[in-house]
Length: 233
Ligand SMILES: Cc1cc2nc3c(=O)[nH]c(=O)nc-3n(C[C@H](O)[C@H](O)[C@H](O)COP(=O)(O)O)c2cc1C
Image 1: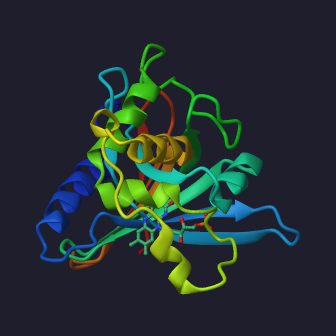
Image 2 (image 1 turned 180 degrees about the vertical axis):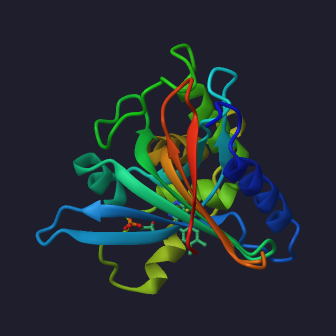
């Protein structure tokens, strides 16, 4: 065991860099599974865009996976009931699968009650999550920001044409000038949340190796780091 950055983390970082260079890539996309308490209890899975692997000097071996969502989506209620989640990446360019299991938490608007709130432990008690949320909001495209101004995701629509009434683009926080832009920025920012996954286990499959390799990593806590076990692919 080693407290240093684990092999799966360097492999995932390298694979995501390679995927980003593939034309028309969707390499930043992973599938995120949650548990819907039901009844009946049901597995739910959906695609999400991977935004960042967050690491801190305090815990360089324990990266946090960062994606974003709309606080009104069902996944948030599911995580509120059970914060266990699993994300899986398939990186075509490196022929690798990374299945990352852990706890998911949210960084929503400070006045928002829904979902499990992030605990600052890994990034340090002083980490400013609201500043991070705003920075990620500003880093996204105006079209993406506009998606958080839509009516509640998953609710019925009378016609596809209803979407023509929704804002197409929303400016960055500091760039809203008209009253409607200012209103839209506040609506979008209010619905916008970071989703942070803190891994506890990683199942890493190297399909391109001959023979194929599979390794299971289990987080043993600060100091001990990741236990690594080679397993049958
Ligand atoms: C390629 C792709 C990327 C997506 N990225 C995200 C994302 O980053 N965050 C998100 O909440 N939904 C994303 N979605 C939409 C989700 O897959 C899903 O339809 C939506 O979030 C509702 O999920 P829920 O009802 O399970 O909460 C993406 C969909 C696709 C097809």
